[in-house]
Image 1 (cartoon, helix red, strand yellow):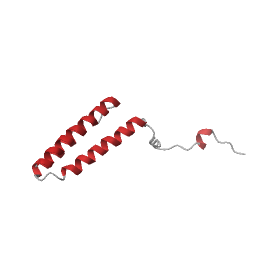
Image 2: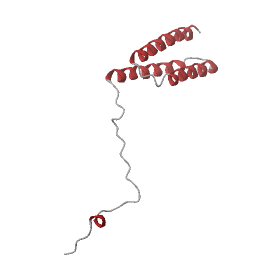
Image 3: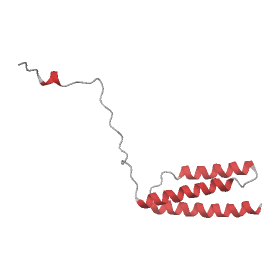
Length: 103
C-alpha cells in the first residue's frame, strides 16, 4: 500500500475563498427600526407635498433643502436626537404646507 504525505493530499488554491458577508452584522434595535420608518414616512410626505408647489424653482429648492437635511443627519445614532430631528422636520414641513396652501 502506498502512503503519501499529508501535504500531497491536501489541495492548495491560488487564492483564498471569500468570506460570505454576514447579513446580521449591523442589526438595529426595535426603536431605531421604528424611527427609521417614521423618517421614511416623513420623507415620502415631503416628496408628495412638493408636487403641489406650482413654481418649479421653489419645488426644486424645497426638495434640495429636504434632501440635504436628510443626508446631513444620516449618520445620527442617538435615538433621542433622531426623535428630535423627526419632530422638528414634521413641524417645519407642516409650516411649509400652510404656506403652500396659502399660495
